[in-house]
Length: 165
Image (cartoon, rainbow, N blue to C red; front, side):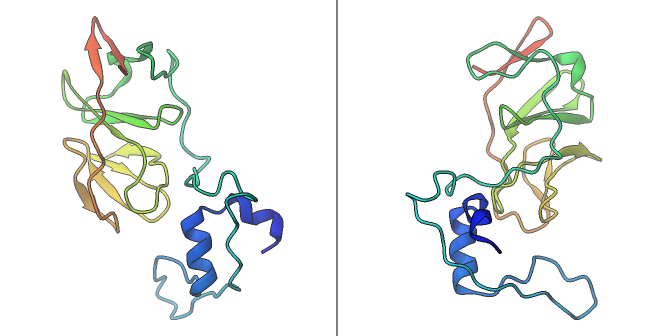
């Protein structure tokens, strides 16, 4: 690992890497694991982004209208599939519709290690980093290493539009 790559690590990941061998989160069944050389953690002064979690680039962009935290429209209700949902990367929120007309919103930040969830499929909100899955009905953990449910987010549904307050 080069020194240029250190600012992209989360502070927690850098500290862990500096004290233990990083071997990955899953067992591929081969009986082998890769080891990495421990690196010195970045300092706050040298890494302004060190405290922010990494965000996977595979999270889809927000559908129109654009996401906003100041009460502008997040999406039309017709854009959220019944029995599914949509991840709004920019707003770090996922909106689901477990049953027709029943809209729920949760933080899109995985409670395991802070990655953004990237899809809603088969009744769950899925994190690409380590396989955590959350139920679309209440954000509770359905599988994977997540230690807690996704926190609920406040939304307003009015005249066919979903907004964040």
